[in-house]
Length: 82
Image (cartoon, rainbow, N blue to C red; front, side, top):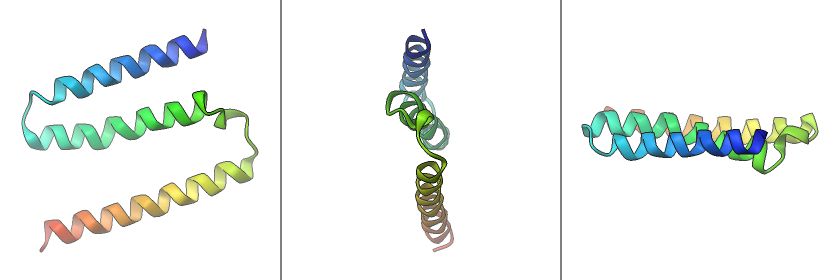
C-alpha cells in the first residue's frame, strides 16, 4: 500500500512538472528546482530503502546533498550577479 501511494505521488508530481512546462520560464525553473528534489527524496527514501538504513549512511548522504546544494547556491549567485 505504501509503495502504491508513493508511486501515485510521483505520478502527480510528474504531471505537475509537465504542467509547469506551459507557464513562464521563471515559474518553470523554480517549480523544477522545488519538485524534482521532492521526487528524488521519495525515490531514495522508499524505493531505494533509505528508510531502513543506519543513521550513519543517512548522515553521509545528507552531507553530500548539503554540499551539492551549497555549490548550486554559489553557482546561481555567481550567475545572478555576473
